[in-house]
Image (cartoon, rainbow, N blue to C red; front, side):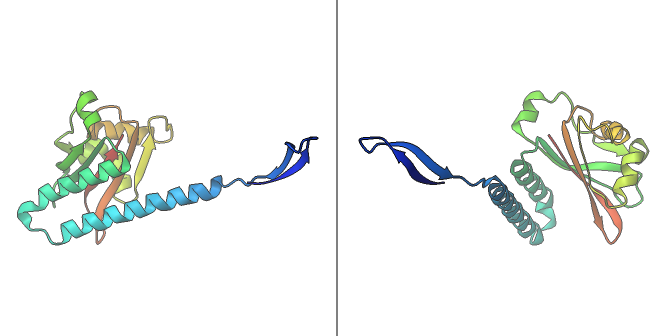
Length: 178
């Protein structure tokens, strides 16, 4: 803000000020977005470096720790990985992390196995490699939300599902919910 005294009274005290202000909210938003992106990239680099040089024995605990880091960074209540083993027709829960809030309020637990037939609409989209996300108020994805209840019973407000693929083969699903 730049201000200039426009008028003074008889004793020289300012009584009117002429000024100009500039809205910097757009710049602030860009700065905040950049900070979030840098934080996310640091997290991915940390997780990648942890998993690159790991032996098979420590793999599950390192994945669990990576899920914790991810969950805390994105403020999720729960982060999980389901795997699809070759030739299987169901997803198997491999690892998960739950925040303290989930431990207090969740009256449901993750399903250890889910038949692909029970989540056919969800599976059809995930198989294409497309990420899925929705909120509890999103009417557009009612069928997908119903399938999700077969995967995870309960009432998550926000859900993000990411297919885990390599060379066009589906290996599993990473999920985050709040």
